[in-house]
Length: 254
Image (cartoon, rainbow, N blue to C red; front, side, top):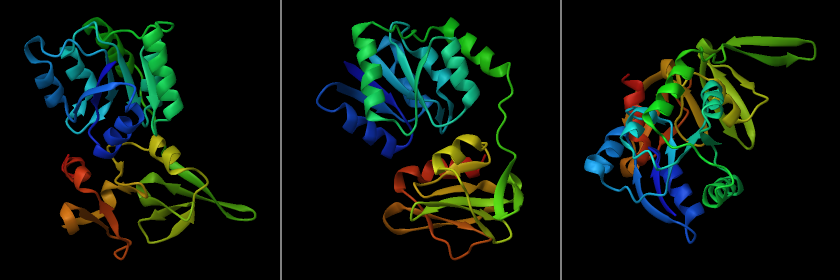
C-alpha cells in the first residue's frame, strides 16, 4: 500500500517508516495541517491507499486538515492520550493505535485494511463532523493530583499545579515538584503523559515530561538542540532534539 504519514515528531515518523519498510511504500510525511492541505491541494495524490495520522500537531488537531483528503482514503489515527477521543473514534468506526506504536498491532491493523475484514471508515466531512461533535459534547478530564506513598501508613497528595516535571532514570519514574522535592511515582512515563493536560505538560524527550509553568528559560545547545531550564531544579539538564525544538517553542508560546 502507498501510505502517507502525518506526524510532527521526526522520531515517531522515522519509527513508523522503519516498521513499514519492505512491505509498504511511504508516499511521504506531513508534519503539520498546512502540509496536509498543500499535499492534497487541487485533488493531488488521490492514489494514497491509507493515512497514518497523529492527532495533535503543532498547528492544531489533524481532524481539520483531513477534511481536504479524498473521502476514499481510510485513516488510522495514532495518539498518545485523550481517552475520550479514543471513545469517539470507536463510536464513529475510526481505527486507532495508541502510542508508543507497537509493531505487531500496526501490522495487524494494516492487514485488516488490506483484507477488508475490518472496514476502516473513510474520513468524509460528515464523519469528521460527527467525531468533532462527539468530542465537544464531553469534557475531557485530566488528572488533577497524584496520591503518593510516603511512609508505611501515609500518603502525600501532590496537585498537578505543583509538579515541575516527571522523569525516568534507571527504570524508576520520579515526580519532581515546584519546591524542589522528588517522589517515586508508581506508573510509567507513558501513563503519566496520557493523564496530564497537554496544554500544561509536554513530553519533551524520552526521559522528561515538563510543566510549562515550571520552565524558567530556554537556551541553545549543541547541533541545533535546545535545553529546557526548570526553576526548581537548575542543575537538571533537559535536552530537546533539533526536530522537536519548534514544537516545544510553539507549546510554550501558546
